[in-house]
Image (cartoon, rainbow, N blue to C red; front, side, top):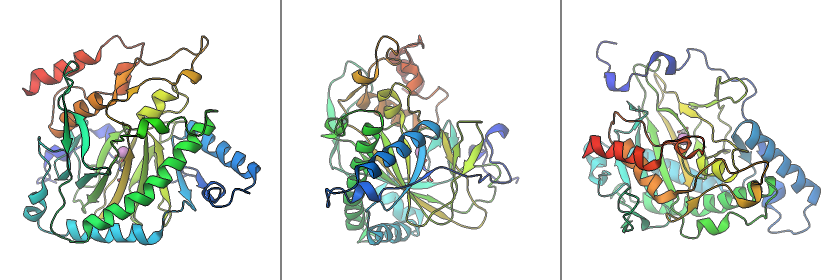
Length: 371
Ligand code: OGA
Ligand code: NI
């Protein structure tokens, strides 16, 4: 392995195990009772109740689940998958025509680092509701915002339409999931909706090429998703591993054709005051087969102040987090993921009331090193 670029090599304790553990895996949930309720109001309330119970158990015990009968047409998923493959099949120079830079966080790039180790992947990011409005800087007293547009490539010509059609469908699903999660926390079905009025949801097309050293590198290093909810489409190759809450073991998520994998992000962890934890996951790569996946990261408006939901806290269960601004958090995170930094990346545990560090300390440490 003499030629393998050391930038990709994980520390021994974070390398994938030679044998994948499949176990029983994450729960599979059939959404048909809730998907049909909108067209036929006669759906059995007991079926909905049962569904909400399954969502609650999955969110508590795993932070992850798969959904079937989710209402997203297979056709729109196949179209985006095909277009993504055609885009990534091009030479790197072509893809770099729409390269993400410090001026625009959307587009193509192949140099992302997770926890300061380079990921074995290339990606194309686009925002669902262009232009995305974000704070200009991570400095807390700077109120200026900026608009970011998507950078669509010329080739393949059908990519843009395939992406736009796909997100329309997945967005409907994401709002249904959000409503089910609200119900599972005994909140009103539409409790979370207002946070998404000017949402900053974005989608990533992931391509994991075959890797000469799949025992040393990862497609994406261990991490938690920072947003509210992730709706992931993976192909039949598989590679996603989820850290099982009961024993910390990495569990392989067996691909189920046309299912979506759902996980709770850091924002739901904070809203639920830790009732639902955002769970670590990572991607293993493969010696022979390339893999594609498409996460849809459902994120609130940039000005959203994220804090535990009032109805879910009381004297016995006080808020465990200080409020933080989503846009500032996002910009800080993007900035430090973009470059390999020798500082700890910003994480929501920095906002735990029990953590004495302040966001400004974390931000100024990043600033000192980069600028
Ligand atoms: C991610 C992620 C999983 C996958 O991009 O945040 O966790 O299976 N991807 O590609
Ligand atoms: Ni992720």
